[in-house]
Image (tube, rainbow, N blue to C red; front, side, top):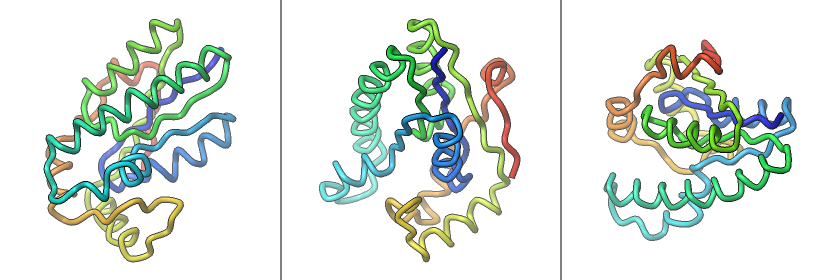
Length: 164
């Protein structure tokens, strides 16, 4: 049975690092949203505009799903590191998995905000290409912090909580 794993957590939780490791462990193809956004749209962004960004994120999600669906239909595993800030975003992919008769797994990285903020500062300084796509400012961190919805019990019935 193919596996679809949705990785979520607040900014700086370590989603990309975790996804990289997990995809090797379960022999999965990994998709991370940050490099897609950086490559396709960073040069076009003139200011931080959430509506502008989320519209482009949705375009990436559509293309990523098209490829993910092909992988899953051939019994391959997929790890999605797409932010999944809200329950609604996660449910879109869970519902798509259900239509393929696959149970999506939600892996929630539960890391306290002060640790995540320090990780972001370190990532901004080190700029390791394995995990750095763009600089995350304090304003961006705070903005996303207010939007993140922690997965509930129902979402995690086929998933796990990963503690810091």
